Length: 221
Image 1 (cartoon, rainbow, N blue to C red):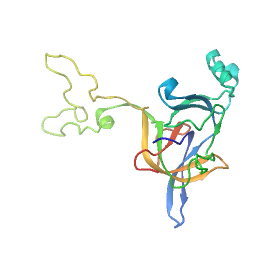
Image 2 (image 1 turned 60 degrees about the horizontal axis):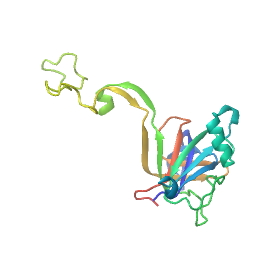
Image 3 (image 1 turned 45 degrees about the vertical axis):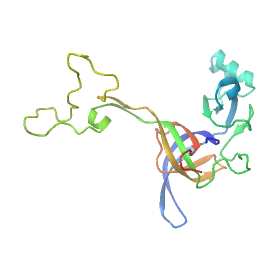
Image 4 (image 1 turned 60 degrees about the vertical axis):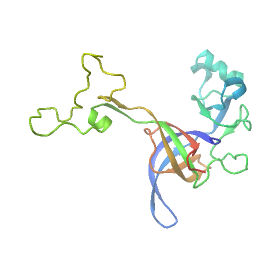
């Protein structure tokens, strides 16, 4: 059940020491305060979600529909509009501010040390890649008559019928740049003063990439 979610930017990776002086690799996320622009409910929109924004931009730099959307909600224009799918949005209202230090329905911090989270981001784009790198293919033989085909995928076509390659065939192509969700990561530290989240391990995406953080829905608290 998704009932906690924020949007942040990936700052980069570093390391900290735990209570037993062991090194813990962490990814630093900067979570700017979010402003609720629109609330979507099942009876009107068919699903529950919060439309949020962060940062500030001049209304003159937006298109008229975008500027009008912010003006109608009475919310200062932000850099991006994102949607956070949640199971229950009854406790939120338009214009409300959400941050790392915000409290949930039980009066606790939105994300506390030790919480399990799911992180969604767009992975790094790696450009054009062959079948071995992109799909972990084994490749062709290194001997017995194999000539300059060692990293090729092998036969991909059909016979005269249907005489074409089926859609979805694993072939060379552009790698990365896809929406990726990493499950059950751990919040190592929450810095409410600087609006930072320290997450154990690596998360998808490049530095500066937009990241959506939700409470874990599989085996997490």
